[in-house]
Image (tube, rainbow, N blue to C red; front, side):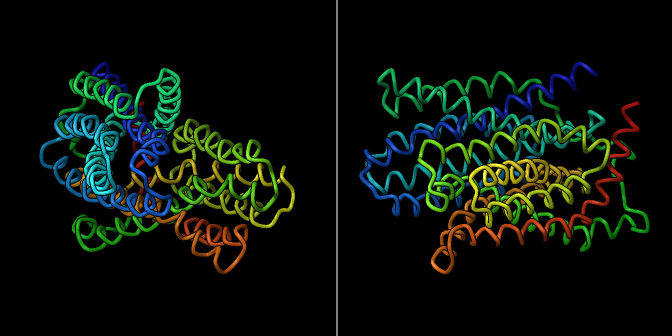
Length: 400
């Protein structure tokens, strides 16, 4: 049994790396595809909405299928579909075919994303201690791999279609090979669901539980909106506001991404010791301090420090929200994770746009005050994870 759980955990790591690699491969080929199709940045921005729409729909579909069929069926199917769909943007020759390609790729990516997160919840429940943040850290590793492979493919003279097709085929093979190690179904042993003191089981399964899921989803939207804003505006902040050269400004996002990855590698141990509520509360508060420093400091070194704190603070927040949603009801883990992940994904896509709108009214650095307010709101609302703290104590005690 211990061997099968370890194998399932390793397989889950593989699928997170795979998802990050497939999405990262599309990202690194965006400039070449944009040039070949002959569209402007503005048109590309509009087409990316279809990518997000497809992902949102895919998340809702896959969440329910995962609950019905099991992660062992849906996760590898999502991996195969996502690998196959990766080549479609590389084959697009005009805005219309690119639009269709992005809608399909987004749908397949959403299927893989939600199903692997639902399986990660099952692994965490069976493993007996928090492991969710580590899975999310390896998603970032996939992005790094995609950047390295993309650079190698470009230097070798491969076209976007050939490079994306090659990665897609490898992804399909990995998805199929890793499928056997996945858990066959969500664990539903007695005592695995923890109900908050003073709360009855019927209430937990009724309107109160649904309201809690949507509150988790709203918090995911806030946190991932902050992540999306950092992805697109961190380097521009150093360049346009503080006057840094482009080569130096690029390190702003690198600093944010590095501390976020490090934080996620460490977060599981902190969750086991202090509980998910503390991670969300103090993490969001740390992120609020970091982005406030970015918004108001005139010094470049302080801006780097602010972006570092912002990434470190945000790093453990989203995994706790996904984990809490999945553990709320094992029989509906996929559907609940899909709601939280879907709304969070909307926030990730909306973040750059919202900050862009605000720059019409205020300076870019002052627009970041919105992110401060969102982080503070998440910190105040962290009590929604109080039942998660009880769950963490149960997981920790069950591992002994």
